[in-house]
Amino acid sequence: DTAVSQTPKYLVTQMGNDKSIKCEQNLGHDTMYWYKQDSKKFLKIMFSYNNKELIINETVPNRFSPKSPDKAHLNLHINSLELGDSAVYFCASSQDVVQGETQYFGPGTRLLVL
Amino acid sequence: ILNVEQSPQSLHVQEGDSTNFTCSFPSSNFYALHWYRWETAKSPEALFVMTLNGDEKKKGQISATLNTKEGYSYLYIKGSQPEDSATYLCAFTGGFKTIFGAGTRLFVKA
Image (tube, rainbow over all chains, first blue to last red; front, side, top):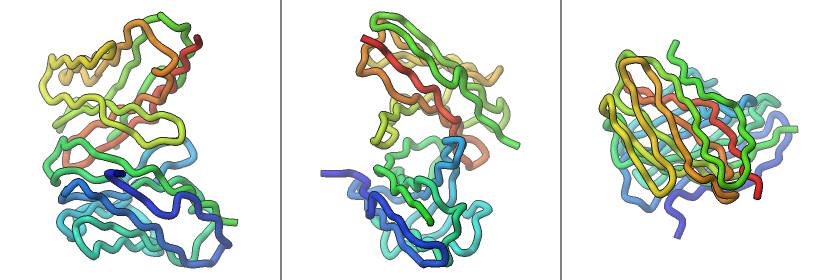
């Protein structure tokens, strides 16, 4: 039973398309995150939600819009995909928003924009 | 600019060797330091979280130390095994941000 799951695992799409990546956690956590693994393999925070409310929004193009229908789900919608959006996107969750909480990661979604 | 640096970038050792890696982080606004283990094609898994200067944590043959005053943490692996091959990530939490290092990629040859 996967704690943090993401779908799809792989996504290949054309430039200009709109796509969504879904994330679900069954850990009962209050806080969820989206990270982008950049070309240098760093994990960079994109968004963080606590109990369905946005608490961190790093400098991310507004083509990226997170949506949290409930605290177990945090989906990432990307409009007008660009070549530079190609990356691995990781979802994570933690018990709450208190600093220092261990994060539990999903398996990643490998996005390739052609 | 908050920066977390890990060294070395990669390390090749023989089975049975002991090894250690370094994580350097800002010494101001420190709240916690995490170590994660990340196997290829899997997701990062938590190893340790440390919050106090001088903290030491141990799990099996893997241990970690923390120096918040000078801003570094060491991860030690005693008697490396091929199954220890992975990327070891550290993450600094402070100022309500969590920042990950790029990781140290460990290869253990049988």
